[in-house]
Length: 191
Image 1 (spheres, rainbow, N blue to C red):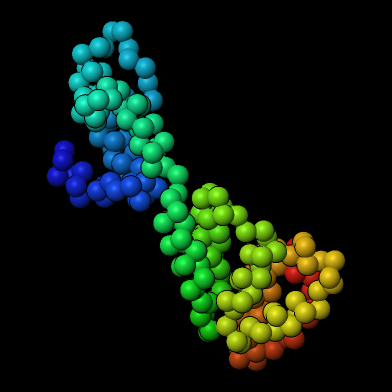
Image 2 (image 1 turned 120 degrees about the horizontal axis):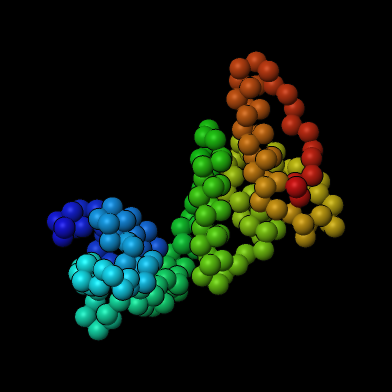
């Protein structure tokens, strides 16, 4: 069991709880051990249940559920260090010119979500502006559209509006190379 565990589940460190707990739970399910976490000790199968519980318990915590809750409580929340790393990754990201913007923007949105979970929430309009700053020069038309946004709409600006405009810009650039070439018309970026 331990050689398979070493191959399938990363070694637990205080900073990799998110990845570790998902893979460890999958591993325990595959080994038929997860039921120990999710079920009470049955009166009619005490020996079997105790044997399975001992396979995954830590010495001073006698029940698997106690172990899991202990680890989750102590390591489940994002740390300042991991939040800093995500913010650094977010701020250093670029959206490559010539590539569809959706994958890079999706990655940026996942960083925003992680940071929110860590207690560093960016308002939607700030997220939209950060994404806008990361667009490559060929998509500057999106910034031009944004400049036509009414001051009252700035507070309701959302990443979805930037994503739609960037995607449209990218697709129209591709279409214009293929001969279609529709002009990108101003639209509200708030939706």
